[in-house]
Length: 151
Image (tube, rainbow, N blue to C red; front, side):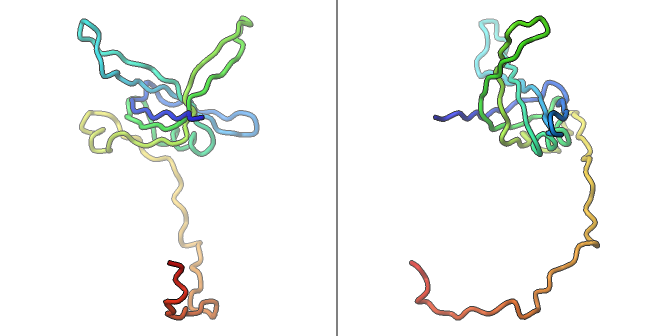
């Protein structure tokens, strides 16, 4: 069976990020995607697609994406059932995000007057890292033997 969705649209709001169960990050957001056809009055039609991301993908989205940004999402369509506060059965259809990327450059966002978020990450301390010893006896040179080529 095949279930793959590829979407490109703008975030309608800042992503909602939270932790559930055993500190599992989850991020939800909605993409606004204009259809290629218009109404009889010439008005554009927009679909609003709910998306959910988990784990490191959720952290990445929280850090780099904000309301109004263009995003390209690859994932799978899934349905989810639950009971609301009144005890009624509810169903939602959403895209479970496998990949997300920027749909426009930083320069084009700035040209359109959109704020570009500052990254919220820690710079690694490279001085604390030790470089590997490549001058030891662990390496040997291979012979140039054309007979070993498998093709």
